[in-house]
Image (tube, rainbow, N blue to C red):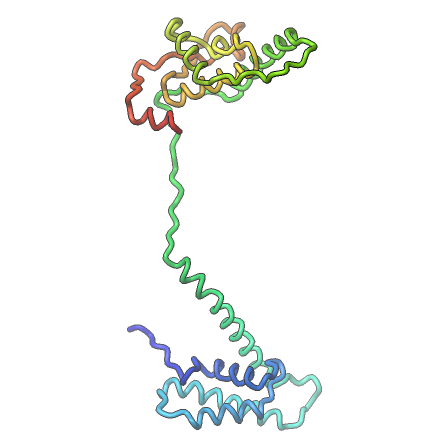
Amino acid sequence: MEALTYKLDMFEGPLDLLLTLIDKNKVSISDIPISLICDQYMEYIAEAKGLDMEVAAEFIVMASELMYIKSKMLLPKISEDEEDPRAALADALLRYKQAKEAAGKMAPLYALYSGRMIKDTDEISVDKTEVADQDIERLFAAMKHIIMQNTVMERAEKTHFTPLIQKPIVSVELKIIEMLEVLETKKVASLRELLQDAPSRADLIASFMGVLELIKVRRVLLCEDNGDEENSVHGSEAMLRLNPNFDPSSEENVEKAGD
């Protein structure tokens, strides 16, 4: 059975009533004038009519607590180190006030975020059906070797005149067409063979991006050729060949090409 919260007029409990009386009299929680607050509390209890007994019991218990504190404060102190009889009540009121203020701040946040749901991150497994595992260090070494060769060529051809017009932008699509023509002719070619004839750094980068795009859409497959160690970077070299099962009209390839 669902629990019900009863209220005494506009107050949700004895602490709520005490806090209202303290605010009304503009006194501090840490220095409660027990005599004044206790009298006003008893007046409110006396005027309340038709109370639910279970709820009224909570207010009556607090009334007895206030009377006990009031009587204890009338007695002379036995020692200077004696604890203030109002300390426990002041601590309870302070905690209640903090909770009430926090509830007021949390209510709009709950209304805003309570209906939201969190979706777990999807785990995407590595696809190894068409592309063989490759060592990233070998690919990096091959690319670095090609860049070094082209840098030497650029320095040899460099003149002392600064061009007035910037170099034209190299089209990745054009490089893709050129590399596809090479693969259709040679059937199989290494990454070095496809990139080593690039006339400039811009052509080299465009060609390398074209290779990555062709591998991404599976127009070209990456395989490993354990060939002559003298002609390879680390004894074996990544080889590229056309994918015989490539379907340019496939929705899967169209989606991957657009990513």
